[in-house]
Length: 305
Image (cartoon, rainbow, N blue to C red; front, top):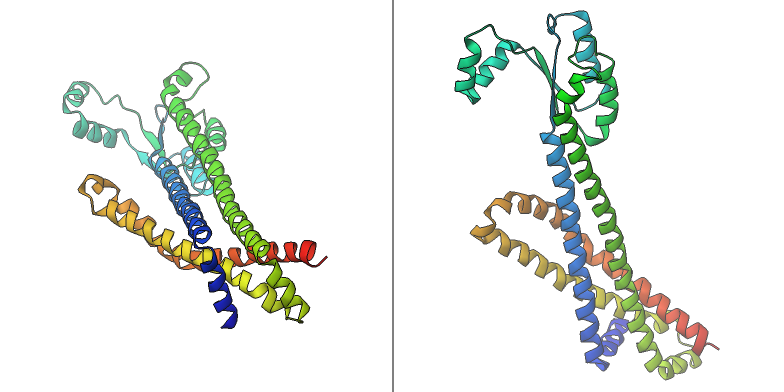
């Protein structure tokens, strides 16, 4: 209890330094929360892209899902590529779907024999599986409408779509890495700020530290107040920053202008709630470690000598 009292007294001795330190640490922690939201957003965006990707591959005339070769292709995709959904679409089903989507075009087709081929739709494809899946598809060119000439041009739209999406996801992955680096830098900056503040306090109180050492004060009594002081800076700043961030999320969710983002923010809020409980003790531990290193280094390199 006495160590806490001394730590509070140190904080109040230079109220402006303490207030500015809390402001800086609070802003850094607030931006850490924002970076977590950015990471969550890119993860969800990549997932939504993967969910919407699909490719339709036409079977050659005379082939459906009953031939051994067709069964081998369908079962191979399911067995070799986890998560990929395989749907067989007969020419009758394709015509029914076309009638629903474009009745006028379906009327023109129905005047003659159904020219639509049996096809296979592959969906829920992860971007990382596309290259290997494309190689696998190439092994079944004998039953698929797939050749190096006209069909490559015919499937160019699908390939271009995948190429565009792959480029977007690659950029998002790069963004994620950059955000993680920024996240680490912000957390490291919090440690540096606390380190420098405690270093300054030890400098101004070096006479008292010398007296405590001369009278045989215990190491815990020398370092304890500074360690607790660093913890208090981190705990107070993190609590305020986290409360403001939660309030900001709640304010955005309450505005009708952002109604489309409410489910997304609700999902993020549920995950952030569990992190918020841990952020205060985690940053407090970081503050205590920084404060101990600052006081130990200064005392042993300057006062101790």
